[in-house]
Image: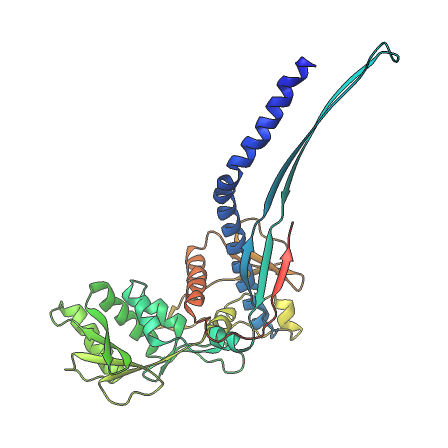
Length: 359
């Protein structure tokens, strides 16, 4: 009997010690595991919806509203002893020692479909110009931000790949972006928020003392956009037409428009084009004979790629972004970031909430 005490004591101490360190240990493990899983599923959801919209299918967005992990550790010990006095009965003697440990994990994940008013705010509402300009002020390249988020700049149209109203960019658009990028790189462009009464507006300014090349770019931008050559402050507003020559009208896109436009770059299977399941990819644009690189390259193949940044199956094909295509990866991640900037708050609505125990 005495020989059973040592393993029994070790077992009990092990169980109670495990209970003591279990909570803090799971924080480190679960935070990174759930972050990776939610991030991957978010990217896959965005890519599959981009493909669906290209094919005229219905996009479905589901938010992960909450993740709750529950853990339970239980230990049970059984100790038995039977002894009968030899005077009153036949002598018997028996001992028993038993133990049981139980570990239970019950994660519960709550999903909330994006619909109704929340869908309209998040996907169909145009991005506010201050949000776009804040990205530029934060250092994001102005040419890529405007190609991504702007429909027109003072009436000059950006390219759009939506099947219902697809059109190339106006001839002045890409030269305008090239000059704006040159001015941004020189540090000669500035933005500030100016409050008038209860409203806030964004003002764009050009620094006066610059080198001749940057000055030439500033004059080109002012002339192309129809701005006052001597105006130090340019008001930035939402719209397609400026009120005067001291105003810059920025017609921004919604997240849905951005996704539709990016979907037009997908290299869809030729058999699907021949069968009229999807429209062909728009031809590459050129500026003075030089091709304009696409914002993003999304490939398709019958087999799952082995080196993909993200890949999703659809209609017996795989659609994917090459992990070695740094530009496409960066812009896809930028799309996720812009999507996270959209307003998702507001009044509560009766959208269904799905809670799934995944343990």
